[in-house]
Length: 215
Ligand SMILES: [Zn+2]
Image 1 (cartoon, rainbow, N blue to C red):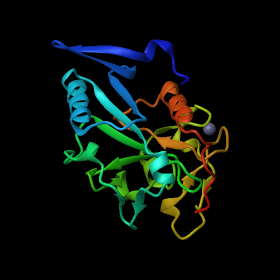
Image 2: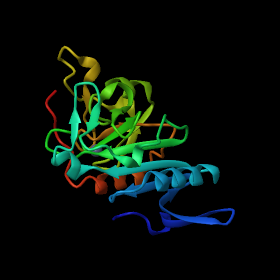
Image 3: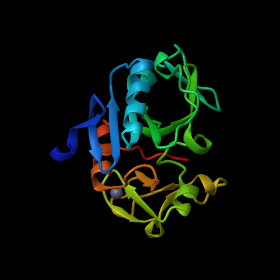
Image 4: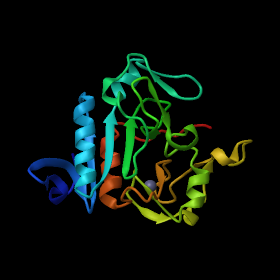
């Protein structure tokens, strides 16, 4: 993983308990979960970081589940074919916790921000859209944005090219990065750091290059 050494594997203490955050930038902890994790463990970790005064970003790698059709999209939300115990007790979104899933394939953008997760399924955050696809509205509400393909942070106003802007659903247009020409632009969010490090990580985390999607 290409990530600045000083941000990796940082020990955080709260009372007698210590945990090592995968990546810590400022007061945000990013946990990368490639292997299965129990519900208790997931809850405990999350609460620990929150109580210690950190924001938490979880990135779960569900690439193989997606490729093996263990995740189904029913037109409105995603369903786990086999219920996932990890999310059994997640009742609602918590403030200062963002959860992203990687569902990499040829026709789905690699990282989506998810919401309303349970053992049965999950929704894509804000109107069921992959994060770097169909982001016209979000980018127009956000002053700055970043490209995780080339790592540039820039003003949303600098975006000139969009995929699907001429179509019927211009609101679902997808931004093209003015610096590298790839549709890997994500809007600024108050809850995660739009910094070069984070963008760089997103790029490394996606095993495949962002997909040029026809909308
Ligand atoms: Zn770019």
